[in-house]
Amino acid sequence: MNIKIWMFLSVCLAITGCLDPTTKPPNSYAQVDLQVLDSTRRLKAIIDDSIITNEKFNTIDNHNLEQVICENIFLRLNANENSTIEQYFKEFKGLSKPQQIVYSTVLLERNVKLIGFDGYFKAYLSVGQFADNAILGYEELGAVELSNVVKRAVLIHNKAHKNSKFVYQNVDSLFKLYFRTSNISNLRTNYIRSNKDSFVYKP
Image 1 (tube, rainbow, N blue to C red):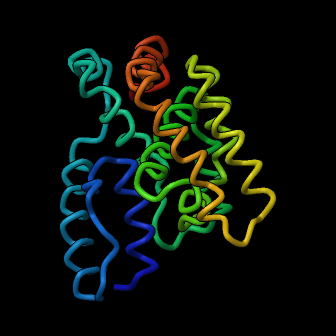
Image 2: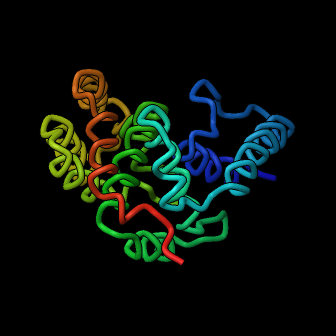
């Protein structure tokens, strides 16, 4: 087990909610093994009940709907530590538009809250490649302020500053502010309800 794999699982488990937001990067390979083992157990529990049927969808309350849908989308992507950036993006493009909107916005939020925009753009498997999808997603969801902040972060990223960690501080703060005031989780939950057919299993 190594740091590279820990970074991949951090991204994956952040999107599924399996990774505790307070989890800190490991200081040793022993810590890596323990953190990955614990997170893998949580992920296995999700995999065991991953199919969302029409009946199951109707029984999920609004408080849990967003989380369940995100877990399901991640499992459909079939990404792993051996995936290439190109394979990851190809899997993503195979999702429906509503799935792409939910996945890209939640992925961005959970990474930015954990490691800021600098970390988001540098994360393993280049999750920052979905920033443009997140921008369009926020506009579709009606969260224009969040969309505009992500646009600013993308502009900073494209300028390739050497001290990027510091130039992102302003957009990091703005994003967290608008995240708290935008009610984005409710907007996304309503969007999922309105696009139910994109999220249920069709045998």
